[in-house]
Image 1: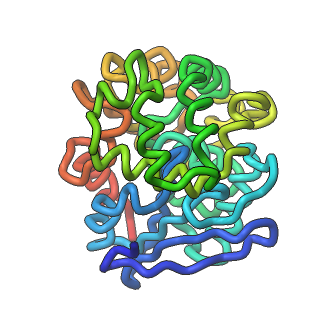
Image 2: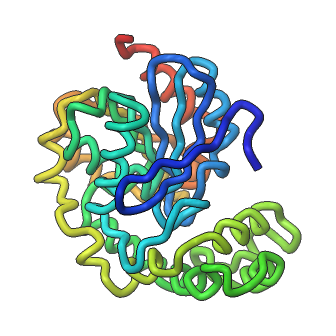
Length: 287
């Protein structure tokens, strides 16, 4: 369902058709990239808030939401090509903001297309392929369960039932959210639309997916202002303290904020501390 303040349109990159949401016309541009197994609507409350002052664009990544699927075509390099084409043709130079997988793609895009990224906001995303890979290995059971339920093989109602016993950290989704949770329903809807190949590549072809995503190569080439947002490691952050300490000296213009008590999936709450930090950062950027 479209948000009241957003319209949806499509953009053909030449390799895949991306669905995207766009806020009311206003300058300057801000492009938001959602996390893995997500879609733009998952962040609609935050995007609606940002759209009061920014011309917000929010594409569904390839294989996600209602964007096109590409058989075994989900490397960081391919995502970056999509977003680079989107920035050049649709948004123009922009503030680029991403959460989780979207943050990884945002970092790699800022490296690949510095002329198109005015500033970078990274929401609790791994900054190096090695640490990202370890996180994925730790969550392999969840990835496998989601892959088996994705791709439209089952109706949404069946996915919702089957998700109850899927792993979520050291527990199950049932134990954490309870039956009938709207969170489970929303996840079921996302998995129904999701290309299983995207999750399959993370499990079976990770080295190819992450090739070139090396902080010592990628980060020093990023010279725009960067806001690095870190969830609480004790609450399941995807960005460790050790990784942050290695990354900070590699970035030319970086602000880092760590949020105690906030988990990875709460970084985009519109009234939360991370979003207050985002707004403060955006207010300091020149028009």
